[in-house]
Amino acid sequence: MKIASLALLPLLALTACDSQPAYEWSGSGDDAAPTAPPLENARLQLELSSEINLEAAGIVLYGPDSGIMGVRYAGYGPVSCEFDVVAGEVLDDYDYDGGDETVDDFGGYGGVHTAVITTQGGVVLHTPFTPAANAEQEDDQMYVGGAPTFKVEGVVEARLGLDEVVALRHVDGGCAVHWLDSDQQTSVPDGLCARGFDVDPATGTAWASSEDDGLYRITPQGAEFIADAGKRLVWDESTRTLYVAGAQRGVVEARDDSGALLWSTPVNGYLRDMVPLAGHQAVAVLNHEATIELLDVHTGEIVGRQILPGTVRELAASPSGDTLLMARSGVTSVFSVSAID
Image 1 (cartoon, rainbow, N blue to C red):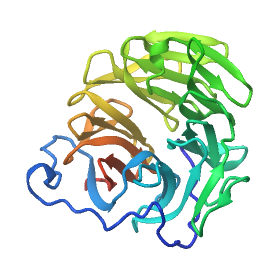
Image 2: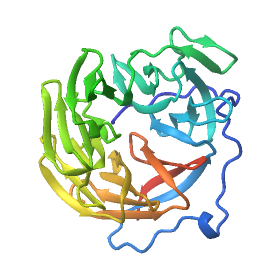
Image 3: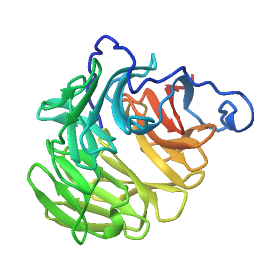
Image 4: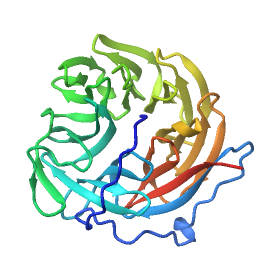
């Protein structure tokens, strides 16, 4: 999602989200420093710039140097932490009612830059550096007791779309896409409640996919089957393109806003996550073997590749695409993205 940067506030003392000393690769074995195999016609490269020693449960970046992540932290349970990417410092942290906090999205809502955080108790709309209106401050940095903005159960994921929060959620008898502000719902096949979900923020149109049910385009008026597909997808606002795992394992497809196929590219292995790199006209694709491949958004050509140590669960990128975050087991790696001279 294309968004404007926010100014940073002065750094606060480390809190429940204390990142600990920066992680360092040992340079050997399973923890060896990442290398990339030779790639003809490569135009983009990744370079490790820092590590944040936190295990993320959802990440969004709202500027080149700052973002918010859900964190699994022993003794506190999942909390939401604002952080400085470059310094690897935590700026503030929050603990909302409902537990199991996951940071899903960030963008414009009512003219205000807003993060979307899902909990067991519903969906929280969070303005960076601001606690919930009814939150109580437990200490200098930790805010607790903030009730969800939308008290709905069964939310799998939530996104911002056309000044409205759109949630994929379990409902009585199945699965539905729920436009929370206008309280409209469209029922979808049960298998779509499996985290293959995104929303076009310009129109509020939702997309969901699963290996069993395929790819659907969803509006308040109904759900339209588009094609057989896998369970990973992401919407690219900058090009108005949907990138989705193909029905054939290890294939990425690009589709326009009607669902029409634009291109299809085989990549290295089963897909785990994808994220657009808007300023570089590329999409980063992560497979289960911790290889990142960068695909040209217009042709699908592979224009960059990086092998990573260990297991990588999810990706996040800055609005410009110059910073790429990779959530690994116990640590979040920060890479810079740049053109090859």
